Image 1 (cartoon, rainbow, N blue to C red):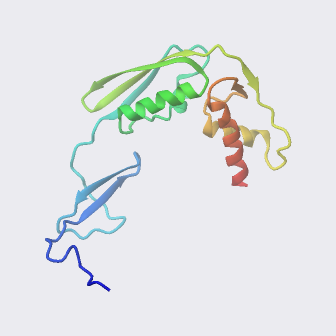
Image 2 (image 1 turned 180 degrees about the vertical axis):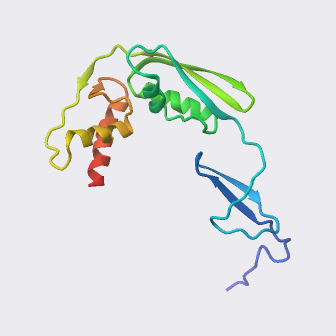
Image 3 (image 1 turned 30 degrees about the horizontal axis):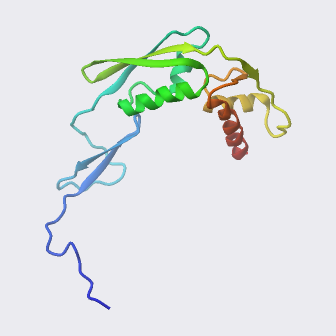
Length: 179
């Protein structure tokens, strides 16, 4: 058997890294710990750049839906870190919902806060009623609540187009696993 070689032997000691999580936002940041001995749960004060955050989300072009329903469907939250990739993904979620014929957006940044304005045209496609049948373990209200967690705009109907009409079955599956 060949001799084991330690790749770190003789190398300078690496700096200790401490990860700090900001619960309200959910991001994890890494910092040099220096000579500090920190344990999970210790409180620290961190100085640094906060990055660009979502300050406000607006929606233009609504006819039937509320702005709150559109924002919930997008998955974006005020106070969260902003990135173009996340904004594009949110726009795609709106398109996939089947609720919109057109989705666009514009942004305006002031300081480290960005305002996002979704420009939407609601779909004129038909919707079909959702009927719950043979769900003996759940009430209709429990099923509706489970669906609304996955599809915030759920109103008892499902769009006949779009990719989110499968979200109803996803929510049904999730509610059945909770039992």
